[in-house]
Amino acid sequence: MLNDIPLSALFAALALLIILSAFFSGSETGLVSLNRYRLRTLAKNKHPGAMRASRLLERMDRLIGIILLGNNFVNILASSIATLIALRLMGENGIWLSTLLLTIVILIFAEVAPKTMAALHPERFAFPASYILAPLLKLFYPLVWLVSILASGVLRLFGVSSKEGPSQHLTREELRTVVNEAGALIPQRHQKMLLGILDLEKVTVEDIMVPRTEITFLDLDDEWEDILRQITSSQHTRLPVCKDGIDNVIGIVHMRNILALHRHGELDKEKFENVIREVYFVPEGTPLNTQLLNFQSQRRRIGLVVDEYGDIQGLVTLDDILEEIVGEFTTDPSTSSRDIHPQDDGTYLVDGSTNIRELNRIMHWNLPTDGPKTLNGMIIEYLETIPEPGTSLLLSGYPIEIVQTTSNAVKTMRIDPAFKEKENQDA
Image (cartoon, rainbow, N blue to C red; front, side, top):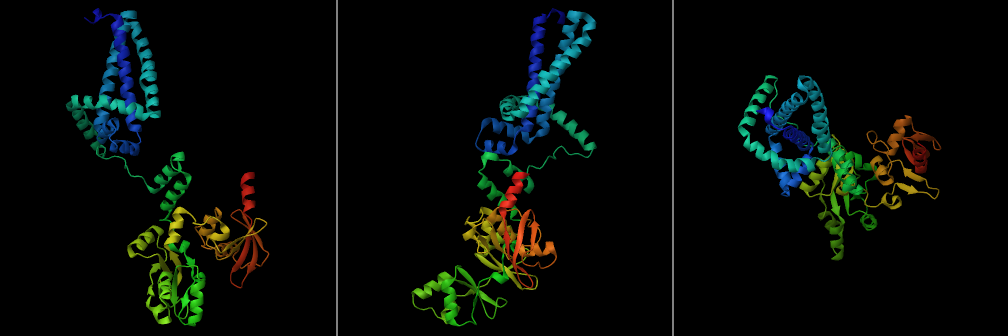
């Protein structure tokens, strides 16, 4: 009876089977290559193809089962028809030739080409394919279920559960890679903000705090006239209040409360002490993401950083943490930091107490931040001694000239960022 089938019909059937094989091969690659996060977004937006594809991918074993079942069926049937055609045309000697030709045709047109196309354009292949695969899965569900059960049994022999799958959650470093490779999809400034949020866990409060030697505070042991003079000239909205030095902090005072007293003509030392608020202490080593939540829960904007002995090490504010995310609020180095002073020749005079992270952020430099927190500490660690004025050194590619020192620290230095830029251009 098979000999009564016209050759034209056999060739047409063979071509159809190769097309079906290409469909199953491309569908498998397309569905597996889908961006799962984009797929979820499209599915939430009620995209029909995405919703069907998402449901198919929920049970990967059954999806692979129906695809391989269909693919193997059409490939075996194509091989049988090719053999029948070879026998009709060339006899038994044509079987080897038909096997070789069919292998080449299937490899090119039913495997490599459709899988490559599906890998390059997964949505174009996977979404239309889901309209066919979903009904096929329902139609042949008993057979697919049986195959899945048998395959799961074989996997269990090797200690593998078919329910196990790769984690769909991005790690911090994977998320960083996604942000970096977003390109034009995310503006560069927004990329920096997202990366700043991811970096909060790596940075602690001592990396961004104002050192205790630079904390501006009000001392109740001073004369009231001196306190008033300091209040009127202060550039800060909140100031620590102490007695006999920073080691004996009483609390924090908000300038808004002092202004209210002054407006009503009630500002005196007694009323001033009544508006002092309890101080908020922050343990050193607290990650910035944790401290940001602590500021929010405690409804605070400022805290004093203390070490394990309770000694004050510095001061940290909510603004300092936000600047780690959004960048410096003021981009002009001459106004954004009192520790960095631009000179007419393009160099900068920098105070030794300048925080390394602040320096990098303001000047767009790349000094290492995993060691000393200040520029003075970095230089002393590098030289292992207090240098003499006039000493020059190359620190992370930046030429630094020591301008002024004290007996125990580097006070002022000169940095020329143009040298680093020229070095990068030459490289």
